[in-house]
Length: 208
Image 1 (cartoon, rainbow, N blue to C red):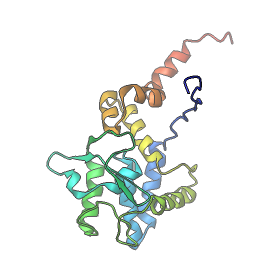
Image 2: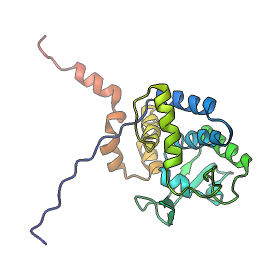
Image 3: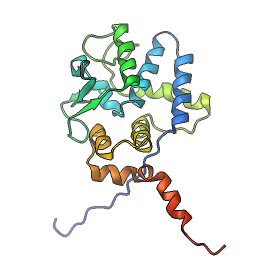
Image 4: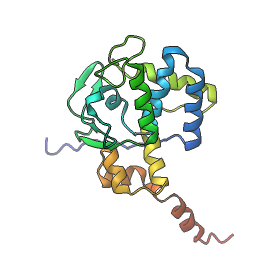
């Protein structure tokens, strides 16, 4: 096997929603999802403002929330109905909760749908089997708002790029996402140097 080289796989660039797109989508979900469906508004308020993967959100327990220190422990994932004691990257982390994500948690807790899992399927009142139910709601929002369709996973990319564009320390951002700093720079370098890139390009003499 020593002579066989691994096939090179090209890694796609992140495709986040812009801050304006995110706000429009959340506003649509809040105004148009009624009854038990309104639960998905809080799901995405939490997803957009924590950067957690869908599999991590669906595995999150109330016992993982530290209300006093405003943090949560992300150490599990839930995929196709099976809970794994590891995250996708096998890195457990403590994620800081901000005003928006705390507000979502408080709203979900007030509904008392579960005293174990934070987010459960409101139709079945059981843990999510997969990410299809929330994904369909976001697809409806994108279609209604005429926003280019992207996977629901990209809420994670949105949070990462918002933090970087707001000048948050990249070491902290990588910590929150569960990435190494090297991987963060490789994946999100475009957003780390957005305005600087324009300044550098302005130096180029094109001869016109």
